[in-house]
Length: 277
Image 1: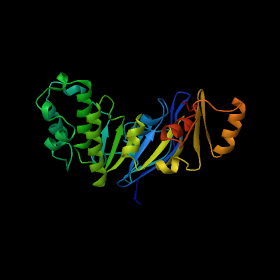
Image 2: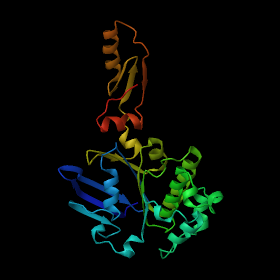
Image 3: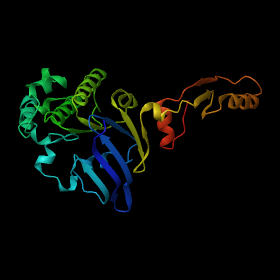
Image 4: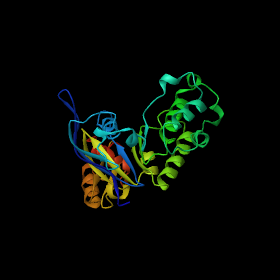
């Protein structure tokens, strides 16, 4: 993974006087899955929309597959897959008809029937979109995003509304696409999804990347989380910290546990929230 397919430097997007994206730097390599984590309003979806040529930017440089999305043409768009769209104008068509219809937009589409199977909709292939549940509609969105056999796939909260079985089935599809060379940029609120799929994770808050790297790079092995009844703290000097804590309690610390920080601990710290036990 040494070829950069997405390169972003100093990306900015303003909505009035509010900076949705405030000088963001990002890079994704060929065949890599990068998960972007962040709270609501952090700038994740805005970034995806700019990179996928759905939204203009106000500053910075962007290259996706060697092209500035601001100058996107049909050939460029055909190389992308985007799971954020909804076929709201095709509600009277069946699942099979919609997926086959979208496949016709691309020069090298994947087999529509195979895609329908991979997103778990074989049993609904003859049903109209208006007859589907919210979770099933979201699976259609995923099918439309991958049917074009994209070189770069943008996934903006793709498994919202999925049950656990559907999520794991979707994970298998993304792993297969990545192993075939597709580069994936995934935004998600599910930390387990990021850990399961991502080669690297980037944490975004207030429109900027706070940290990025593999899970092991983000979780410092020198640190431990000390928890007790009523509180917790992360420290690189657990023995000294526990001695001070014990002195404060006058002896035994109630509910004392010591462990390595989780991705959730690191994530909450990076976005500026206190870690709760």
